[in-house]
Image (tube, rainbow, N blue to C red; front, top):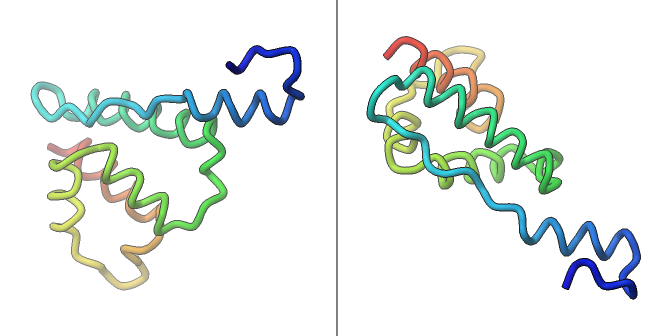
Length: 104
């Protein structure tokens, strides 16, 4: 129980983090641009609240694609690495997903 008086603040934070739920998958029916913006904001809040923003880019990408779902994985797999861009950089993937979802 997270609210026990015997816990210190660090134990309470750890206990609370376990209860943070990841956002629902990216909705691809309807307005993809609006769905992406909403999903991205919820995902970024989730990453911040759960303390995952400081993890390695590869893990962030894995989390993003796993949580976003099959359609996001399909989009990711369609990306071609161009000069100066790296499919292993989290910000590059976010930028490419932004471009894809805002256009389509």
